[in-house]
Structure formats: structure tokens, C-alpha cells
Image (cartoon, rainbow, N blue to C red; front, side):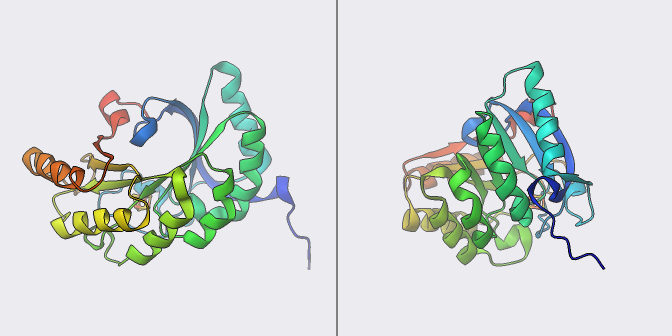
Length: 239
Ligand code: SF4
């Protein structure tokens, strides 16, 4: 029986895709980024737009070296500002991230982590190497679980690197919005809050425009930086 422990370049994680595109969500919308999409998620959101990434066995197992090689191939053809670590939930693969992130930074690229905000202990291990943390708040109406305390711990750990995204669907309640605003106000009020009307890809539908306008006004009267940004890459029809 082998007792070998995999060393850094041999570490593997399930990867669905490595591709170049424009960031379509949040505060960096329009930035050219390389996306590394991890397989596996610990949640099942009713509005998930990448359901193929949810199963633990999704994607192909690739090493840190493989992923860096794919990043280098993309960089050879054009300029990218950052690498977006997305999923699925990338923090399920925190040992892999801990090896990958310093090598991304050594290439002069920024590190943009897209996460569901539910794994604060994993975040603590890699947050130092991140430039941006795009953190979703997942209300009970979307995932059927209460994640508010995990989100609180997570947001504290992010500090100034975080912005919070709340995806709005017909099922989102005014209580979800109130808890979101209160938590941000308690932990770090200057954190940008992005209200993202859901793109209709599955059964979840976005909320009516009048409701969106009224919620934006309500949240904006309580926090200094509240923005409404839809999924722009879906409007452009790019990956
Ligand atoms: S956390 Fe993200 S990847 Fe996971 S189910 Fe929700 S939307 Fe999909």
C-alpha cells in the first residue's frame, strides 16, 4: 500500500473548465479574466445557473500544474487582469487553492474568489492571497438552510476585500433583504452590496422591476454602497 502524500504540483481538484472571458457580475463587471471553474458544491440553490457544477464528481481531475499551464496558454494570446476562482464552490478545494493562488500572483495576475460564503474556516487559509472576494448571501428561501452565522464569520474574515451579492428571485422575501442589510451594517457597513436580479435559466424567476426599485431604495437608505447589477455576461451571451 502506498503511503505517498501528494506534493503541491501533483495536488488535484475537479475542474469543469478553464476559459477566458469578461467578468459578468459584481464590482469588476467588464474586466478581462481567466475563469477556473471547480466541480462540486455544498449547496443547491434554486436559481443556480451552473447546475452541472454541483455534483461532487463533476469535472475532470487536474493538477495545479495542469491548471497553471492552461492559464499560461490563455495569457499568451491576450491580456487578462485576474483569475476568477469559481464553481461550484472553490473553497471545497482549499488545499489546492493554497498551492494555486501564490503561483497566480507570481504571474502578475489578480485573484478573484467567487464563493457562496458558507465555509469561513476554509476562507481563512487563503484570504490573504485574494484581491477580491465575491461573496453570495444565501437566504433560507434559496437554499433551505440558515447560513446567516456562517456569512457573518465569513464577511468578518474578508475585511475590505469583500463585496456581497444577493440574487433576487420571486421567492426572495423582504426579511431576506432586511437580514442582509443588517448583517452588513453590523460587520462592515462600507461593504458594497450588489442586488442581482436572477437570470432565468431554471425554475427561479426574477422579481418584478417595481419591487427591485423599491428594495434598492430601501437598502440604499441604510447602507452607503448598494448597486443593482444583472448578470451582464448573460445579456452579452458569452460564457
Ligand atoms: S452555491 Fe453557486 S454553484 Fe452552488 S448551487 Fe448555489 S449557485 Fe450553484
